[in-house]
Image (tube, rainbow, N blue to C red):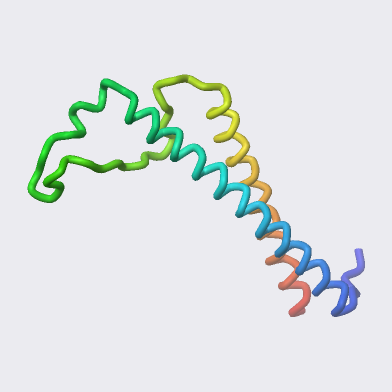
Length: 110
């Protein structure tokens, strides 16, 4: 396989990779934000969050929320699970694009 690509061709490919990377990042951010807001709504509507309202010295009003990885809201909504799986697959695609970008830059330097 020949790597005698012209400088313009490599730059055009890298620009397309960067555009796809940005679009994937935006989509992942949107899905993550939606999942986060859904999990907050679920916790707010839940009767099991009474322990979270304990007043401490650092949080005098007792309010606060910590987002935990692999958190599953109490309502087992299929849409939420699908969104999380979609975000994970988009992240895998974004990682593959980053690897391709690194390889192209390496061959460009050589």
